[in-house]
Image: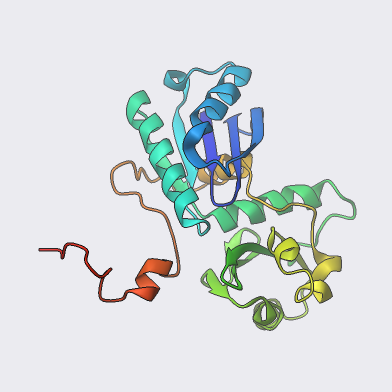
Amino acid sequence: MKVLGLDTATLTAGIAVIDDGRVLAEARHDSSNRSSDLLVAVDDVCRRAGVAPTALDAIAIGAGPGSFTGLRIGMATAKGIAFAAHRPLWAVSSLAALAHDAITVLADQPPLPPDDGVIVAVLDARRGEVYAGCYRAGAPLDDERVIAPGELAAWVRTLAGERPTWFAGDALAAHPEVLAPLAEQWLAISTPSGTGVAQLALAGKRVDVLTAGVPTYIRPSEAETKYPDGVPGALRRR
């Protein structure tokens, strides 16, 4: 089954085309310019994979949490491709996809991680916070959340206990001083890959969210925080 995986939760978009467990082509794309050339990058990956959009069996999107603008662009792009190709759209957690990538990295680094090891995916959430998800054998140990970097170690400790624990994500680079005590456990993988998104979606429930799919933000937007009663001067909803 050929699946296009896409993640835009961070400023580095992950794009890949897989055929079951085999990666046909993948790329990391600087999406700091947002949607200007994301479709061009997706098209390039499809071309290198030798797979036309109409030959895909499904589209998989990392639904977040992450950059609000990036997630909206990613969801809209994935929906557009899925609509045009008449294919289902599957959504997975961007943090879970990052944890999946981390497991792949650990599998290539002997000794292999023990079965009871814990992976913590942590992405910079701006505003002095991080998005965090804690996983064991691919399953979440608690709800994903947004927390202060200084609270991360204690939260993970309550979930992981004495189990071996590894961290992954760009939060270390964003908060190096606060997260320095965890640096030795931090893997050299900072953003979710398109491959991780596609593989996780393929192994999951494969629920089609083409019409109902929305990004997972976890926290309210800055506008919602500043203006809980609505932006002054804006038209009220009827």
